[in-house]
Each structure stands twice: as C-alpha cells, then as structure tokens.
Length: 380
Image 1 (cartoon, rainbow, N blue to C red):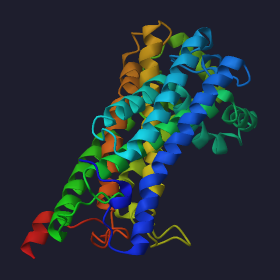
Image 2: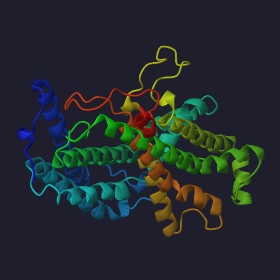
Image 3: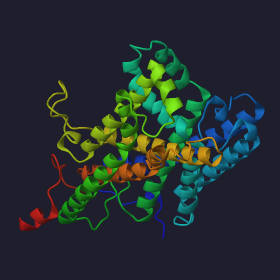
Image 4: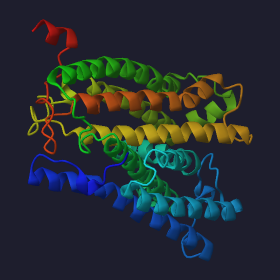
C-alpha cells in the first residue's frame, strides 16, 4: 500500500518541510534529466548536437557513429521511459512494480553509454597536473579532451545514472514507510543502530581489503616498466614505449594513480576518513563530509564498470587486448569486481557515518573514529 507524500507523518513542521523537499527533489531531477536525454536524441537526429560516440576515440563503445540511428532510438526510448517514470512514481502508482523499470534503466545507462572514456578522463585528470611539467602539451590536450563531446556526453549519462539511483533509494524508503532522508524505520532503537554500525564496519573492512587487492593489479603492470620489465607485453611494443619517454611516464603515472586510489580507499575504514588528519593544516580534526568520500568513490566505481565492459566489447570485436597478454586481461577484466567491492565499502561507510537525522529525529551521534563493535555495546 502506498502512502501519498503529503500524508507522511512528521515530528515537526520544520522537519516536514525538509522531508517533503527530500522526497520530491529526486523526481524533479529525474524528470529534467530524462527530458534532456530526449532532447539529446532529437539533437543527434537533427544534426545540431555532435554525437560524442566512438568517433571521438571511445574504447569499446556500443553505440557508434556508424549506427547513429540505433543510438538515437535507444536514447529517445530511455528519455521517454524516464519522463513517464518520473511522473508516475511520486503518485504511488504501482510503487513496487515500477521499481523494476527503474533498475532496468540504471543498468541500461551503465552498460550502454558509460565506457572507458570516464576512467581515462579521471586517470589523466590525476596525473596531468604532475606530468604537465615534463610534457607541457599534455595540459592543453587534457583540457581539449575534457570539453569534447565524448566526455561531456559520458558525464551526462553518469549524472543520469546517479539521479535514477537516488530516485530508487528515496522511492524504496517511501514505499517501506521509512525516513526518506536517513532510511531508518519506526522500529529503530539505539541497540539496533550500534549493531548496524558494527556490521557495516566489518563489511567495509572486508570490502576495502578486496578492493585494494584488485586495485593493485594495474600498478603491478605499469610500475615495473621503470625497471625494464614488460609484464607480458609484446617485446617490440615495449621497446617502442621505452623509446618514447612521454608514453613511459604516462604508464607509470597511471600506475601510481592506482596506488593512490588504493591508499584513499583505506579512508573508508580508517579514522582519517571520518576526521581530517593532523597534517592537513586548517582542516585537521574537522569532520570529513560524507559526500566528499561517497561521491568520488561511486564515480570511480562507475568508471571501473565502464572500463571492464569496454574491454569485453573491444576484445569481442577483435581489437582489444591480445589473448596472450593474460596479465592485462586479468587486470582490466577484474575492474568490475573492483567496482563491486568499492561500492560495498562505500555503502558500508555511508551507513556507519549516519548521525542523528534532522527529519525524523532518529539516530545516534556520529561515532569517532569508528563505531563500537556490537559485542562491546552488549557488555555495557
């Protein structure tokens, strides 16, 4: 049974305003994005919007300029479906059944539109500020790439994926009659909160350990280049890389970015992921905003899924990694697993960081640096 948004019980008038805003905003955002997607498809069809598909260097793209008609049709269908869902979901029409097409829409966006472009853009964004001192042309090239149709459109579909995931979370909470903002139900108790935080901490530690192990596959292929090890690459191709200092620096730089990412993932289960460490002058001891960790982590997870999917597509078409380069197939092919582990760790981090809710009044003060294990709370 669905409860209209306007009939939701609230504790205070100010809390009601915040709760209603949080309830309706995702649907308006989804409606606006879906309408924009529909407009994008029409722009491609009319030729007034450049299609940022495989012609811009996308690796493993499913929709290319050669099959622009399919791209227009798929985008138009998704836009129209999104408009319909954004209008129906807030009205409580078939609340459980309509979650199925939302899941399908999110999956289609991930698989169809988000490819290797996103991870390439993020990876080069990390290393360009350093390598530009040695290769000045990299700065201008990266800026040009950032404002290209390929990157702009991938970011547009990443935004849509995030908005629809937000809609799904809010709608599910509303359907289960839980707080739209924090997700806590009416049966909440402090003991249950401590149990949840303890489980989230344990789950996060396991997920982070798995994510770090998978994240180190790629650096293990690139850092050895400094010492003359090709790591399964063809000897002739590796000689060309050694002869081009710029290519060698980029490869090692991307490997170093992978190591940096592995270190940053530790913040999801360490104290410095809750409070800024002492060496950060001006921020030391201050609370780390939850979204400052969650949003970049989920963006990276999305990029990893896109790269893994692109490798599969490109290999299937016969233009990807050579089959004899087993180490590279493992490193790139395991990226979706890395994304799954990172997503689990990020979700556990977000659950563990939930403080008292200003909308429903439930919750405990945020624990620092980590939640006490449930067994300790029982002994008290």
